[in-house]
Amino acid sequence: MKTSFDYIVIGSGTGGAAVARRLHDAGAEVAVIEAGKSTFGVPEIEDPSQWFGLQTGAWDWGHHYTTTDRILGRDIPIPRGKGLGGSSATNAMMWYRGVPEDYARWDAVAPGWSWEDCLPAYKACETWEYGETALRGGSGPLEITRPDPHHPLTQSMLKGGAAMGLPVVDDPNGPEPFGVGLANFNIDRQGRRNTSANAYLEPIIASDRLNIFTKTLALSLIFQGDKATGVRVSGPDGELDLTAHSGVVLAAGALETPRLLMLSGIGAEAELARLGVPLKVKAEAIGQNFQDHPLLRALNFRATSPLGAMKGNGGGTLTIWKSDEALPQADLLAFPIQGRSAVPALWDHYTLDGDDVFAVGLGVMRSFSKGELRLTSADPTAPLDIQPNLLSDPRDLAALVSGVEFLMDMVASEGFDGYFKDYVAPLREDDIETFVRRSCSTFFHCCGTARMGAADDAPVSPQLGVKGVRGLWVADASVIPEIPACHTHAPVTMIGERAATFILEDA
Image 1 (cartoon, helix red, strand yellow):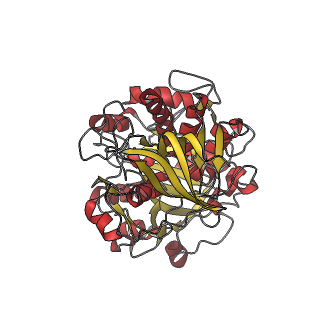
Image 2 (cartoon, one colour; image 1 turned 135 degrees about the vertical axis):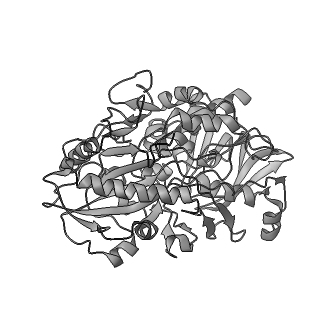
Image 3 (tube, rainbow, N blue to C red; image 1 turned 45 degrees about the vertical axis):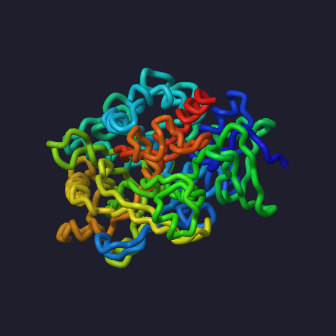
């Protein structure tokens, strides 16, 4: 077994797979550390229609958000994929990049992250099924496709959005996503989930310069002076020290990357003292700035007849609009679900039985609520105290209330003629704010816990290096300074691509 490499990448998910592949392609010997198992050839992962069943159990880390009265004291799981490909192996496969305004906010605090800076990496990571354009890539590792548009719910969403005055958009990742259109998915042309591990790692799996350690947990970083030189791991053969001659890349995600930083002595001084961890680098912002998109799961309606077979991931469209016309940017996103969808509190409150129930998920994507992540102990397997403070900013609550009202009107419009029969959850007479608090869940878009920026208080540089040490970079959603108004799979893939560029320039 090799124990010495040029680079060690911790995490095989969205950012980790991309950075590992690009470092390998540049001639480096790379080790990838993955806490979970291999996902290659697993039927329930390859089948897009089975994604929701992956959110708990063997393929999930089992994290939960700390409860608050704002969500009526409910428990909210925060699914995080545990296996090759990370959350790209368990998520809903949505591929949406956001708009230039999102990246202008990044660029304001971390120069070099404007839309123009990021677009080349976005193009490099994808093969868009309709070929390369000025905005889309044609030869990248990830296959990105549109869904079959012929499911009656997909058609109703397109017609319903138009009936509400929204433009029909050809491509949400085109010049302007505002409106309703067919979604993009990381589903290949054969209809299989195209995980980051499938796309980036599987083609080079036989290379003698790629070493993948599965079922192996990173315990702490190893330093020589101010340089990261390796990782202590626990795997099938016990604890082991792995050496990285050129450096270590953290890509374990917005929950596990800050944990590993803190366990290695990089974090807030008082927090490390509480945990009994010696301070190596004072970084007060580690674990702070936690952000996620609140998702209502979900609005449920009764159709005029049974829904029939599910297509793709059970969705098909994106509806992107403003909760208030005065806003400079669209802040709401809705998607159809070809079946029932509800958190336990909705099951307890409404009658959701029947094969004729469909749902619409609603998220506020230009969200403002922020929270924090704290360690409960220095045990690397201990539960985390994760507080996103969902709905703490009144703008998020107001946007969701507006969105529910819009969608209830939309399904009653002529666009849903012949398909919509009745309301299930919420009912027309319900208090919408209470419904929002009862149904609020997560879009699985946690980010921001090791934010990048030029200012001294940002723990990661705009070139993704951890400040105060050498040979240590972060290539995952932790570095996002402000959550973009989109799903995070595409942005984090782009971050992984750019991380490799920065690392190689620093070599």
